Amino acid sequence: MDETTPAPTTSKPRSLDEVLVAMDVVDTLRHRDQIFLKEIDHEGREEDLVSRLKEIYTAQGMDVPEDTIREGVRAMADRRFVHEPAKPGFMRRLAIIYVTRARWWKPAAIVGALVLGTGAVYQLGVAMPRAAAERALERDLTVTLPAELTEARDAVLAVAETETGIARAEALYRQGETALEEESRQGAEAAVEALTALRREVASEYQVRVVNDPDDFTGIYREHDDLPGRQNYYLIVEAVSPTGEVLEVTVRDEETNEEVRVKRWGQRVSRTVFEGVAADKQDDMIIQDAMIGEKQPGAFEPTYSVSMPGGAITEW
Image 1 (tube, helix red, strand yellow):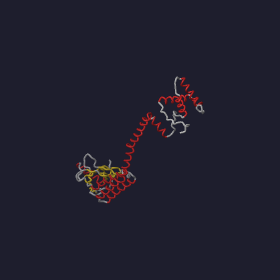
Image 2 (cartoon, rainbow, N blue to C red; image 1 turned 180 degrees about the horizontal axis):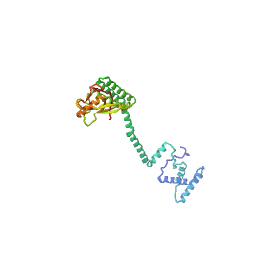
Image 3 (cartoon, rainbow, N blue to C red; image 1 turned 90 degrees about the vertical axis):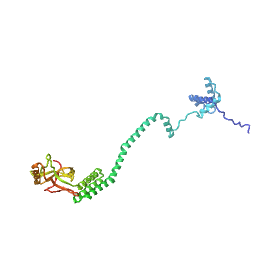
Image 4 (tube, rainbow, N blue to C red; image 1 turned 180 degrees about the vertical axis):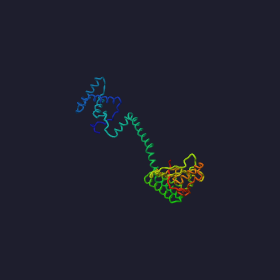
């Protein structure tokens, strides 16, 4: 080894006190920027800066080793104890969010809970029921009601024995189909109900009898709208089954042109028939021959045994 080459030295671990003193040197330099800027930025002036710092510490009654002062000067020059703020960026934002979490997490949690709660209420109370209703409507319009409509029409055709009954069933069926095309559940359901009622009536059997009760109207008359002084005569009748049950039947009111389900109605008859029934009742307050028509199974409407101009009313 060359004698002029200095032997390598091993770094000696520094004690905590030495590190603290070096940090104090740096702190002193920071508070005395003019000293640092004036002295350390010029080559060859480190010795002067160390000497001046030693004087400062001596004046404060502190015996600081020269190598410790030198270490502090070099640390200041190397910015070893200077905090460098993190550069703006994503990681810095995450760190700030984490450090300040005590201020914002509770309000954020409350807001989040409100948002989630509102969303859950909307989903459970509005969105889900609406979606379920839409699915149910689509199923009814495409599967359930078409099947019920066809079944109700076929049930009428199975018992109808007259062209009038068959034509009526087909007309109601077409009304139901139109309602389905228009996506009207109410209209389709009404057609199914009307076909069901038609099937009951076509299959039913009853007698049309004049109401034979001393306390009830037996007949009434109405003035003719088109011919003043001319009157229409009606007998108040009901449909009685073979077992004596009074049935509810569908009657078209000639004054309103609407079909109504009733148990009693005014059947329009000739004046001769009307006066004959009135005379029969006046005799002993009992109508001896109250039956004026009969409905057979499979027929659409009754067959009458008296002079019948046709037409009926449901209110009087």
